[in-house]
Length: 321
Image 1 (cartoon, rainbow, N blue to C red):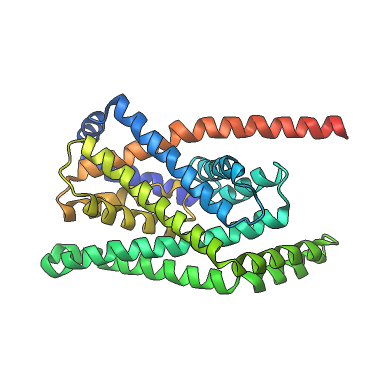
Image 2 (image 1 turned 135 degrees about the vertical axis):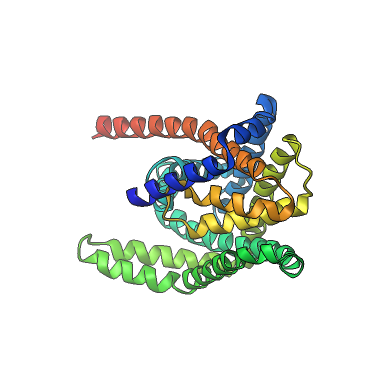
């Protein structure tokens, strides 16, 4: 993971250097403080949508807990983007945030599996939309075909992972329970509880459909945030083109899940894809820089608050013990 991080950092520095740090910073400066705050507000609103999607996958939890689920999602993203743990660390911390709040572990883990499945399905739909938009470019511009392997390969990998994840949920939980039983007596009972919760949740088709719809809305809202930033920088780009670019970026970030924050991958993808839509590379990299700054502006306070909460929980457990 450390090697992947270093390679990603080197790739990011090379991309920014080849385009020109000065021109990228100049484009980013056109956003302004007010524009950056608007961008952060859109991102926070997106967390509310994603939190609602997770809540929809957790039948039995009241609607009033949507804020808690949104907070767990924000913590999960902050850990994934800012700490050297990749996506796995974010998942562990995000689910722990809910269990420490008193939600039964079986409900938390089952809802996470359903939420993750519907999120990947929604992303696949969003990516296919972007792919459809780009296919017109392949027919009209030979240079666009250079991205064909990236787009088709990334979409194929994501689709394969989604299918494997969906069909392997119950067998994987069962295997994990049998292995864990050798080390943690009673763990099979816990795994059985999660499997039962999964079965109950998938039987509620309207809840699963709602989770899917909300996750799709989350992807779209996140992409619209990128379009708003581009417009604030003076870029003449349609919302459809912006959605297409963002669908490609999201896909490549998902495929590069082992690289913390997809550093380097995001920057290279923007530099390659932007010119296909008439967007200057420095403007696209300025958007990437704005996203990194937003991740810090939202993620750092989130991590600090999360750590304070963890410290209080430990102190309470010590006093209680």
